Length: 322
Figure 1 (cartoon, helix red, strand yellow):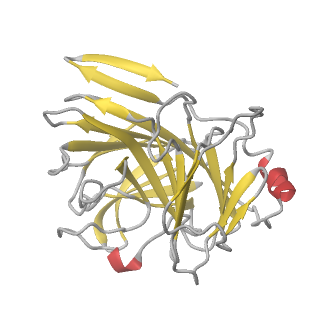
Figure 2: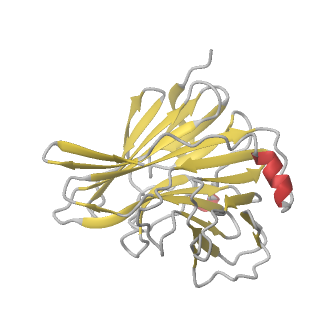
């Protein structure tokens, strides 16, 4: 029987990283900076996440660095608030089948960031609980924003809402100023939005959608990566009301999920959960939607456990599950 193992290692020029593995897949989390999940992949095979070579191994400094991998931000995006540097070391501790990472309180926003990263003892499934806590003196409104930068060369598939709402609209799509509707990297299908990462195309593209199905997929390296989260149909989301966003340039593609907007009083928190899975021996499909549907049919068969908004006031906890 497999078991989850935790070990401290050197990786990518950083002296202090944590490897989490069950001998099927492994994750590597940086502790000198971040934290970032800088690697997720099948053991001894390619990293499914992007590594930005120019920033690997760097520490300290006042500028925000991309690094790559998976990170926790807060939305709506704004400078300098969102781009508070995460170049200092973080603390971590073991929990059953994984670790909890704790970042120092951000000096500018006074927000505390935590991630609980759990790798199941068998299979490829990973559960990540993201937590933001307001340590300041005033209420703040935000959304937990979970961003996974994927390695270049892959193809993303995002399901479109297909509910028949008669004469009323059934989906929201947000577009950023630099996004071109005729960009050849994107295919606006009937069932899916399909986005190809092209290493030779530097121009950025970003879009968001009210992804009610709560998943998105990325084909690369003859593997299939699936990212799950819970969508709350009546909740308020940032960026015109989208719960899923994606960004692509010449060296990565970001898969981004968002929690509902929440007003955090002092010492209150919001949580956002994702689940990842990875499948081997899955060739990259064409943009034919029937071909994609056939590949995904026996793999998209469940949602993650409920995610929550947790508010703690005066030692009491209120949890809204959805």
